[in-house]
Image 1 (cartoon, rainbow over the protein chains, first blue to last red):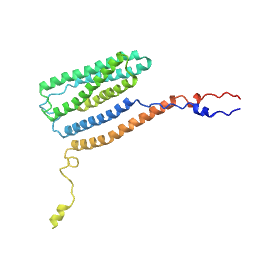
Image 2 (cartoon, chains in turn orange, blue):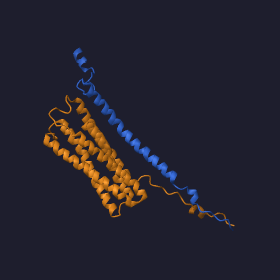
Image 3 (cartoon, rainbow over the protein chains, first blue to last red):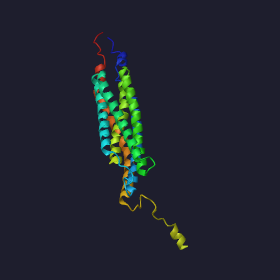
Image 4 (tube, one colour):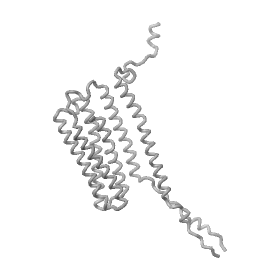
Length: 196
Length: 77
């Protein structure tokens, strides 16, 4: 009678190491942290300039479109919600991802286009990058956010096209989603500090 | 000599906008943003690490036990 062979130990199944986070998500998180610090610095500089000013906003500068931008803010937040819906839908069926993903993309585009329209109106009214510190900070901070939003929209569009072609992997969607969530969540802080 | 010694004594920098700004709002803004920018990166990194740890533990709890995968040895000669 032979003892249990050494091959049993060799055949013992070892627990597979599971990846806690996809590499893309981790890399995007690190990038997002640096961008959060960028916006924190800009908003802090804005706060100091505002606190040191005698009049804010300056009397000779046009007022910002608070209500229209509030509508834009709601659209952007709904866009973030739709992307959460898309990610959860993936667990049920990959096909169920398409409508909310497309909705998130459209609302993101709406946000950027409406912001652009408001910018044109403000420039016509006299608020420019060089008209005052107020104008300079406005275009710097909101412009930096718009640039991030544009890149995030391109990434969302890429994900949507790949998904339509059946070639999108869930970690890829998660990576793009991390950047979009950053764009969505940083905007309310910018709105409250710059517009209100 | 006395004047020179007095001139060398350390004194507050009255030109510093953080220490001696006459406006309360400006002074408060400098302090608040300094604290904010100091604590924010620590909070962000701690938040990410806690979330990764939570996710790792959840995955470990959901993973099948290695013992259940060990093949059973049939008793025999």
